Image 1 (cartoon, rainbow, N blue to C red):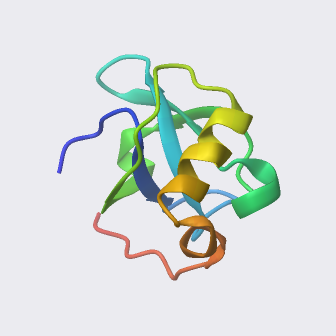
Image 2 (cartoon, rainbow, N blue to C red):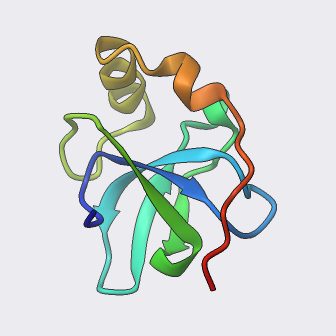
Length: 94
């Protein structure tokens, strides 16, 4: 599964490990811009290393650099708000 805009991922490292986020922009081959949004999953909008993300099979339809409100709307439309709120135990594959 490739990292693409709108892909829902699980953070594997850091203080937000185990929380779900959405890719809103691809910076380069190693970094992406992710958001929770914070009020839904607790993940702030920030740059993340792709090695610290585990992609899920879910994807929402958003445009590049979508605002948190647009991301929230897309999640509501896809009925994934509760899925985003669930915290998981990250599987470290190192």
